Amino acid sequence: MAGSVGLVETETVRLFTAAQPLVLVSGATLGPVDVAYETYGRLNADRSNAVFICHALTGDAHAAGWHAGDRHPGWWDNLIGPGRPLDTDRFFVVCANLLGGCQGTTGPSSPHPETGRAYGLDFPLLEVADFVTVHRALLAHLGIERLLAVLGGSLGGMQALQWSLDHPEDLANALIVAASSRLTAQNIAFSAVARRAIMSDRQFRDGQYAAEGTMPAVGLAIARMMAHITYLSEDAFTAKFGRTSQFETRRRGFGIDFAVESYLDHQGTTFLERFDALSYLYLTRVMDYFDPFARPDALAAVEQRPVNHLVLSFDSDWRFSTDHALRITRRLEQARLPVTFREISSAFGHDSFLLADPVYHATLRAFLDRALEVGT
Image 1 (cartoon, rainbow, N blue to C red):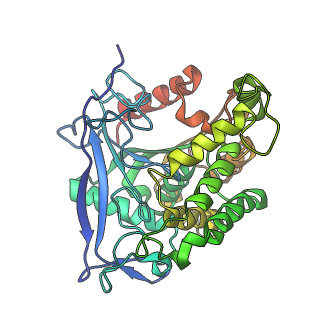
Image 2 (cartoon, rainbow, N blue to C red; image 1 turned 180 degrees about the vertical axis):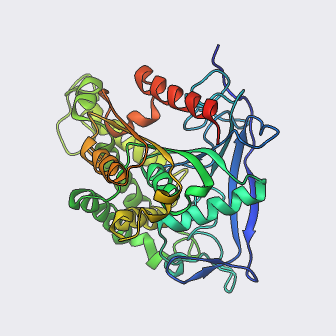
Image 3 (cartoon, rainbow, N blue to C red; image 1 turned 90 degrees about the vertical axis):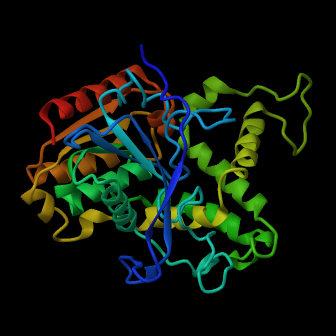
């Protein structure tokens, strides 16, 4: 019977230093760079059962199990554990907080080594390829030369795609879920409004709010509220809230009159407890500029060493619709790479990739089981 991995701890390792810094795609350098990560399951004798999980925009290293005192398990706990699709009795699973994050890995809220204050807007701009560079350094630290698979949803799927294109020698399989290879103007527009809400908040203080003891709470909450609207489908909102009033007696005004308003307000408020505004700025900007197939030689490396790809979308996801998944699939097919595409029917929009949908989970299980059978 499927179960949880139980109590887990997040570990932190310093992978780059001031003397040996991380060199970014832009040419800028960072050091020191600390990375927070968790592992689940056991690495087998020939180190061939490792699966790397890449998290989405507001995720972290805590993908499964429980921390002491947690009210909720890791963000992908329904997928990872004994007997679950990513079965930790058979797979060794690694998940790391990505570069630029705010849950233990170096990011714009980390102290600048020269000033001791948070980097703020002095933190360099990042690219998805920079995330992959750090992930690869973590694998070297763990003594893993080749992965059975890389799996990610949304921004995590972008990382999986980038990894398979740039370093196909590192992995046998890439599972890309509810992701895009290039954001549309509409997607960029959503993030632009979110960033404007944060940076227009009086407490943003040109990015130095931490040093000044403030926080752009209003702007960050609004950014989260708006983003959350895009993560659910209209059908999901209707089924969950309809036009239900928040109070038994309708109180007309400009407060929280409807249940959906209360829900969004809650999402914005709780987000403040776990996420940093600067990370939100930097990571959304990474997504805006992601366009790996724009390079003329984008597929050259993976053509020489093919990676098996699984590309999944959800029919109610209007943020990264099936058209996004098909664009990825067609580019991989044009290079004669082994790729499997499937659209999953779900009423829950973009957030479907986080949920325990039976067909979705069965698809992942089948692909991962086959991957393990074939090996690295």
